[in-house]
Image (cartoon, rainbow, N blue to C red):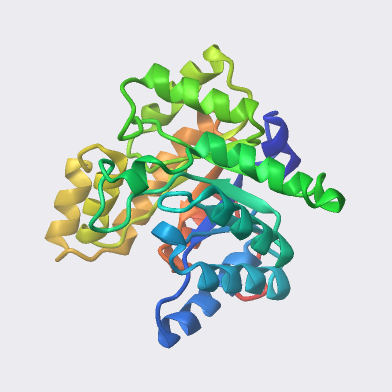
Length: 301
């Protein structure tokens, strides 16, 4: 990862990172391997790997993390979630990932599994993201040779966490995660530059020091746009939704165009980097970076 992102100082050049998720079939795994090679060749700061609620797909996630570690030049960053799992189960998962040679984590509480709600005791009793940051620090201390290795990232919510009552509460929680050892944050998806820029400005005024990476996803379809709107907690941009509909619901170039314009505004406003949700495809996110002039020539073409 770029030192600029760790210090929060102004980067000498805008940077980028990616998110992928484990493949769910043999054919998808082949396609993902192809995509990962292209993503890695672009020279990202890191590639993060998700897994599902209750640690579902964790073995597949660890396999993908090890693939990134062994077969690419990209730094792998492992997602961790706590919903529905005991403290000891999460600790074992952290040690298992560390034993696999991966030491960077994104600490998340996570969403309730399908069919469960926040009213379920198994969900409401889960460790918070703050407690997970603290647990990662404890787990690293239990591997003395690795105490200086690895970074911890956390989530930030420009439009508010679903369980939060106010922006002030979101910022207070983010600063608490910083004080517990988080070294940078990645935002949930959003559509307008000011949603990120105003959030970061307010957080800086309140005492946030760590870098905040804006999370962006160049959608290809109307269905993806609806999903992003659900995650962002905001209506999708009307013009983009209308243009996708007019194109029959599939127009990757429109998602790229929207993301490029948004990223330009964010970088001009001081964002240190962009974190791109890839949907396990490389074409659109690399097109975004190409338009932003952030790519060096790739050996893969």
